[in-house]
Every structure is written in structure tokens, then in C-alpha cells.
Image 1 (cartoon, rainbow, N blue to C red):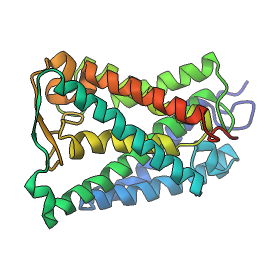
Image 2: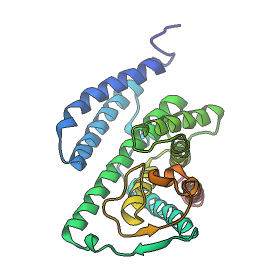
Image 3: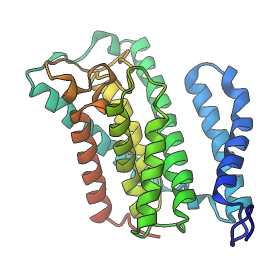
Length: 285
């Protein structure tokens, strides 16, 4: 038995992960000097997609759809539907904070109505869209397929599938360790957050809804409801809140992703995504 190649002729998992990381680093390294950040993320997304497409063809011997990506009205429709679900989930988090005696301090911040405020929200939306695309394609697309060894399309429920989701989700949680005010609670909640984002990929074999969920989760926290997001205070938001919820519920300075309110939103998001896939024609190979 070769230590380099598996029976299907591909490099073994550890070598695939190391090789992909090296290629990705070489492709993205030059972009570190690009500014502004939204342009850097957009160019990185393009480079990442090109690397993944080449990898799919040469290493996996499959199309890019193996990793959950496709260019179709169905894919973008699922992305938009996921965005709506994500906004609803964060709205439930916001409502739960109000129930602790909070008050909506300001409904429409004057600065959001100015041209500079609209530009700031637009740029942030692009950034969050690219972050959602990037992280979902890497964690719920590439890493999930590597760990599960599953075929393209909806994943069969099995111990290996569950383990693949768990591994990818834990790595997703660890990837946020550099953020301000990161804690074990944040790690646990973000890992569960990653598992929720995986629901559409498991059920449809596509990342469209997962990308929409992820984009909305980040964007709605910061730019709609004025909540801290992964330790980052919102710069421009449509709403803000003065609330008295304890840190174990609100997540404190890290935001809902480190509190029980975030767990509520994550659970609601997973349930709604599951129900949407279950009750529609989204489950196709």
C-alpha cells in the first residue's frame, strides 16, 4: 500500500491538504498588497475559484460542481433564499436581546442615509459576500468533500459524513481564533454555526444557500441590527440597541456568536434551511 497515493490514484488526504494549502498560498500571496479590502477579497475569490477549478479537473477528475459550485439561476436563487433566512435568524437574536429590557436606540442612523454611509454599507456587503463565498467554499465545499470522500450531490447520512461536518466546523471555529475577544464560548458557537451552514450542502450538494446564510449572518449582525460580529463593533448600521442582557446571553463584546442568543439564531437558521430544502425541489443530484 502506497503512503503517497490512495487506491483511486489521488494523493492521500494529508498530502492533498498540504498540496492544496501550498498552491493556494502561492496564488494568494501577491494579493496581500492590494487595497481596498473589498477589492482584495474579490480578487482572492477569483484566484481561489481558479485554483479550485484546476484542482477539480487534475486531482479530483471531476467538475467544479463536486465542491458545490455552479453558475445557474437555481444556485443564485438558493443563495438569495439563504440570505433571507439568515436575516430572519439574526432578527430573532435581536428580538431576544430586546426581551431582556433592551430598547432600539435609533432606527435609522442619519449617517446611513448619506452617500458616504450608503457607500460604506455597500462596501461592507461586498466584503461579507466574499467572506461568505470564501469560507463556505473552503470549509463546506473543499474540506467537507476531502474529509467525507463523498460523491457529488446530496451526502448520504453516515458516521463519516457527520465526522466530516464536525471536522470542517471545528476548523471553521479555530479559523476565528485571531479575532478580538475570542473565547472558548465563541469557538463552540462558531463551530455549531459552521454545522448549521453545512445543512444545505448536505441536502442539495450545492453551496448556494450556505453562502447566502453566511453572508446574511455576518451582514445583518453588523450593518442591519448594529450588533458586534466576531469581536468587531459595527461601524455603520441601520439599527442599534441599548440592552441589558448578560454576557452569557448576548456574547458581550464578541457579539451573539459567543452567547446563547447566537445559539438560538444558529438553531433557527439550521431548522429553516432544513425545512426550505425539505419542502422544495432543491434536493436534486
